[in-house]
Length: 110
Image 1 (cartoon, rainbow, N blue to C red):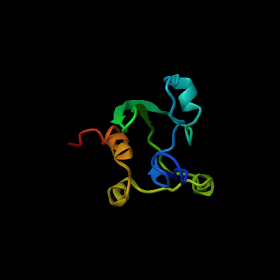
Image 2 (cartoon, one colour):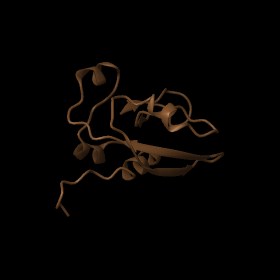
Image 3 (cartoon, rainbow, N blue to C red):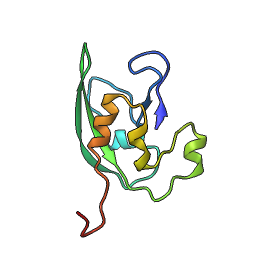
Image 4 (cartoon, rainbow, N blue to C red):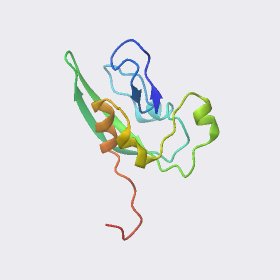
């Protein structure tokens, strides 16, 4: 996670790392160039969120990362275990994005 700039939409709130918001869709290769860590990334879903004056469509990508390098936190990122995300104050848009990325389950798990 990272903290958004203090001013603007969702100012100062936590967000998943990603591209800037823009009117035209990002090409997958262009979007993945903004990934905080090497993949393999997979498209997990699309989230639609309505603000008062525009609708945002977010293509959500996910990757299973065994261990985050220390450089992620040093670069200003905040690293949380998946089990700790429910206790964080996240905007509803980011909750929707997290919901689009269900946790991987081992083979045979319910």
